[in-house]
Image 1 (tube, rainbow, N blue to C red):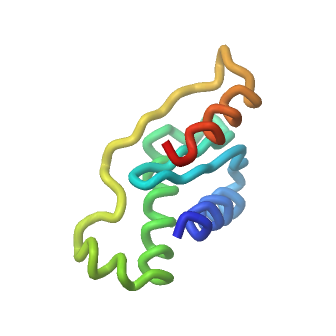
Image 2: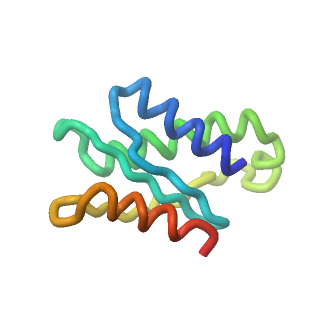
Length: 101
């Protein structure tokens, strides 16, 4: 499922003209580093990525329908940070290092 989620994140970003710089999954959360034009608010990005991945993950993995029922696959919560003072390389390294923690 983790690989499918990463593939879907990349596919969604490509379709919307966003640049997926890094993505890693963990047991209960996902780290995503995206470059987007300023017209995209953080809330729009979170909703887009969560909605897209939820729809297609549920199609590919029917057990998610049984496990989650009609409940949401993802919670409504998310964290957003900006890359202002940090380099993209530092953020990518953080995301890669956090995998499995």
